[in-house]
Length: 397
Ligand code: NAI
Image (cartoon, rainbow, N blue to C red):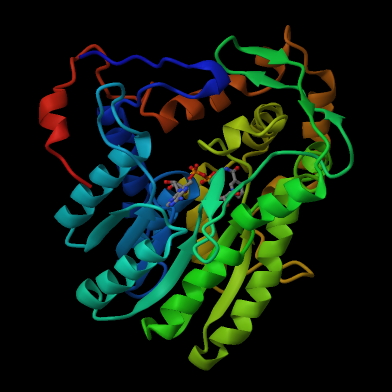
């Protein structure tokens, strides 16, 4: 079978390229292998470790902290209709390489919001990690969550808390700018989004692990957030997603107190805007990303996902160059938020039209990252070589 990128309505890619996904995981691993370790051996749990920031965190810890890792993610394998999800293959390839390199790597596939998966994870920590973890990375991006106590399913929405606003975005399939709107959120929309993307589940995880006695002394946990500047304010900070992220900050303060007994810490990490499965569909965000990448690449400050997470972990999570803001959030997005960077990005955004955006912004870089999310257009991969799906299917995460 030959697999080519097929972008469907809404920008999702129909099938990932399993071998291309392997090359993307290896690229990130090799980046870390070429750097010195940043801390002593760790045992890490990553919630949402199959793609985006979670996968980069898993790789950075495995190869920068010699970490044994357990990842929880919600991914599916090959079916009659699809070749699975990119995250499914990322889990397989990461595990295969980590085990070759002498590391423990376990994948738990299922709903991280459920009690059942939390209990399975605790059992696994007891079995394979001598009963303790040193670090928990919370990196979920999900459209819905079933509350384990009430059984009610909540849906997160991308809406504005300041009334209906224009939110043009990129149609990645047709490669044009399309007009779009962000609808005004009701209080119910805000509450629902907080239920899904706020801190409640992160708190449940940490408290359950704490009660089970599986957190090591000096345990650290962080949840990823985005803040954004003027250009994305209306859709992000003043959007339902921004409200959920602020809830995460309140949770961090609660958890931080609870972790005092272990001399541990909990904090929110505000990461840089990057192309991931989740971010590519936030209105306006792709336009901002194309403009931002152009500026940051020209200024020499651009970082891809693994570069951003490596710097965060090396300098700020374990190192002594932590940048913290006035509400206690850790800020590896400092280079994105730089005044000159923002000014130049805004200037490009003000000029962007369907006719010129490819030449005045870094659309090609943004699109390349988008294709790579599903294993396409990766150097060294022969896309004309048919995939042996039967053989690939024998691999399990
Ligand atoms: P992503 O879509 O690449 O990864 C999401 C992960 O969550 C995947 O591993 C997926 O399997 C997992 N997941 C989703 N629902 C699940 C469930 N019910 N049970 C278990 N696993 C589940 O997303 P991305 O962009 O890496 O986002 C991760 C976090 O980083 C989010 O909190 C996001 O807000 C934050 N962030 C993202 C930025 C960006 O530009 N992409 C910027 C700053 C922060």
